[in-house]
Image 1 (cartoon, one colour):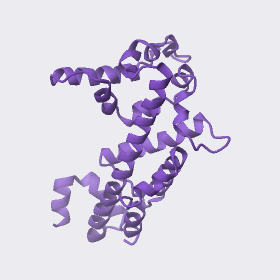
Image 2 (cartoon, rainbow, N blue to C red):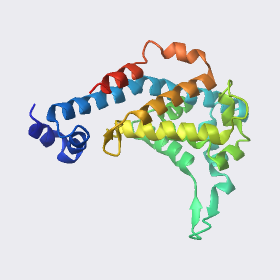
Image 3 (cartoon, rainbow, N blue to C red):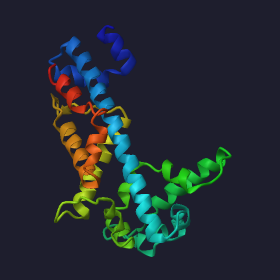
Length: 235
């Protein structure tokens, strides 16, 4: 397909960045665009497993903490509505309500109601996005939950704390969102650069190790990230 037709389908603004990075070489620009998609695609299986593992481990920890298998429903008016989540902004003096978790659960409940499906904790839990689970490491929620979220990491290195975990999870979440919105992951400024993708990949493996080192073996036959990045770097 000619570059002008590609621009027409995908937009000039999107394709021009690939052209700049490849010195206005039409063939290389299209190859780079496709390699970017292949690398993004290669992340999906391991990101999916990571999200499911974190979700399920967290559910197990909080089910035990609240002695309630329906905690995600019942805690809408519990820790998700804790008074400390309402505060006055120190600069704007506005009243802030951090009800992100509660609203996320209510959104899932409303979705089930709209589709005429029975309400269950399992369905609500599986409907929460990665941001829901990473938010539990935000300082206020973490304190309310007495630090329980970090217990999902049974192989945490010494001197590793909430901030270390949160920073890594937030890095992965931001990268995941870029992929979900079809944003490029192959640039630094106007240069071809997969260093951030490599960094995120290593962070994902690190998080797997912190949860259970055997998870690396489990994903080994579906993990093609390194191969896809190596191929892309040959352009």
